[in-house]
Image 1 (cartoon, rainbow, N blue to C red):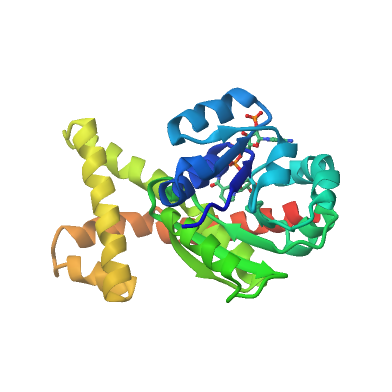
Image 2 (image 1 turned 180 degrees about the vertical axis):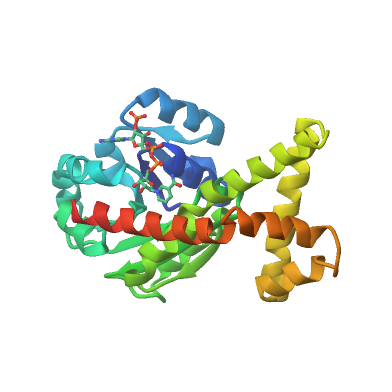
Length: 271
Ligand SMILES: NC(=O)c1ccc[n+]([C@@H]2O[C@H](COP(=O)([O-])OP(=O)(O)OC[C@H]3O[C@@H](n4cnc5c(N)ncnc54)[C@H](OP(=O)(O)O)[C@@H]3O)[C@@H](O)[C@H]2O)c1
């Protein structure tokens, strides 16, 4: 890969996870890290072999500038680097990961007519098993810069192009989903502990089971209902567990969780 510079402003949970994923592909020497609390960027730079800098330097030197601050901080952060961006002779590609902020909003806040790629990653990106939704404006799909960006981000997991109007819905499933899945993972492990399994084993069994079930769904393309039926023998044990989940409103709770997260994202966008 050529020596494009990938800058990150905001090295928190998601910015840090993506920087880690990108560094795996492009090498730490091509990573610039800026964070409000500089110690956080320094620690990450040490782990990745990257360089730390301030926001202005990241804005000046990056070919791809990842914006990893919280959505409500985006306007203030971008206002600070506006003059540097405006002074650039060659535009960089702005890569926003902010939930609920449209491409148009981010471009407005940045005050420059640069290409903007909006991505919606999730935390499993840190271990290369993420789902990253992506939509771009001001740059064609076959632009070499898009290809470089896609290759760099492949270290985060699966990239999926999506129409921007579907991004918030996708985020409620895949972006917020790791919290929902982790809640289930923890609860299953608690059940195992209640039945006498040591905690570490219970947690490992639950996690590997979820990983395997997800792989089964993705690799076979079978409907989740069919995967469930395949485990439920007539008069058997699993169907009794399914009964308990239905009684507890599990399916409805998961359904409502996605809608609640989606509605919260829409409210965020209006602020
Ligand atoms: N977490 C997820 O699962 C997820 C999923 C999809 C999208 N996202 C998006 O990812 C973005 C970051 O979320 P997060 O969960 O990673 O939040 P986070 O852990 O709070 O990270 C935000 C980082 O931005 C830094 N920061 C704040 N203002 C700054 C400024 N002016 N200049 C430089 N750095 C600044 C903070 O520094 P300090 O160290 O000083 O606090 C912090 O390290 C958000 O826009 C969110 O919508 C997150």
